[in-house]
Length: 446
Image 1 (cartoon, rainbow, N blue to C red):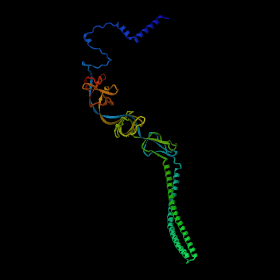
Image 2: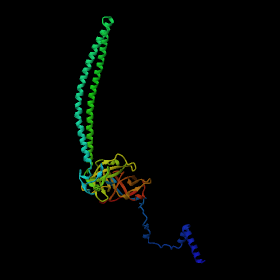
Image 3: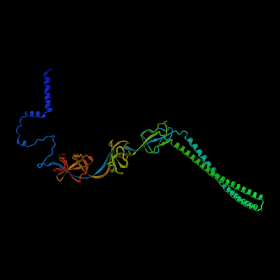
Image 4: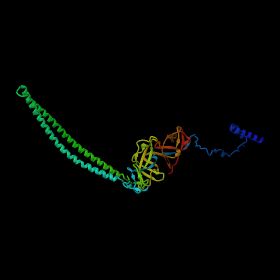
């Protein structure tokens, strides 16, 4: 084994020991080899040498730190709620078939503009016209039965008084027979009349009672005839209504053979192809209305109270387009997952340049508030992690918590400060609340 590698390894281990574990001894050893500094000129010895990378704050002779302060005055500034959202068509509908049949119309291609009421799809009528004619014939037949049924009613009603008159006559005969029977029975009991006469009178009473019962049956039959005639009329009218319903169904079936555009808009798909078999629910075409479009955004619950119906709003789309409109809907119910509220802004889009589904940055205008415009570098955090700025009041530093409205190219807009405040813009990181400082006001340039 060679000796030189072993010696080299031992020296490396010793060097590592002093560098890592006993650095102070190594430093003292190396200091003995540094030559004594030569005497510098007196004027150079008085100038302190500062590390160029070390940030320091100037300190006065009395120990006070020197900071730069800006006197800021609150100004009413336009405020807005910022949200991210998307564009959404005012209406988008899949127009579907309500009946079965084959398409007999030439298709209209996607992208075409269709007017409200324009024919988009036509279905082969098949036997629909025949079904309509059959239903109309049944309606005419049912309508013809109504006069016939109505004619039976007067005849039945005329029989009823006749039957009642016969009943009255039978009742009168019964009364006369009962009187004769009572007289004959008394005479027979007193010995002035024969038993044969009494029996004959009793037979007359029985015959009169039978006549009354027959007359009552005649009255009931007449009443039943009237009711039957009325029922016949109702049945005839019900037949008419059923026939009319059949005609309506046949007409609706024919109307369902032609599919019209429900509103003016653009076709997102081709209409159904010639010869295609349609089923109830099959899509004829998808139509979209874009002459007005909605901007849909979602506002956090902490800011939803600032958004009002009718407020002006603007948006910048991902394509760079800009749009303006008014708030037309503010949801009263939050999304259960995101705890945000849906807001809709209606925008005119007569040229159809804005498309459905584009990403948009939306600003909803709210009431102006008093705010301070300060550089973002003036912001700092206190020991509790609260965002704020440090101000100077009567030469003493104070920390003021602030809320940031929004960032601008000239600085940040902040609330939470008094109307006039001396805010430290340089040196705020070297001071804390409660210490005295010496201030220099910066000059603001436009």
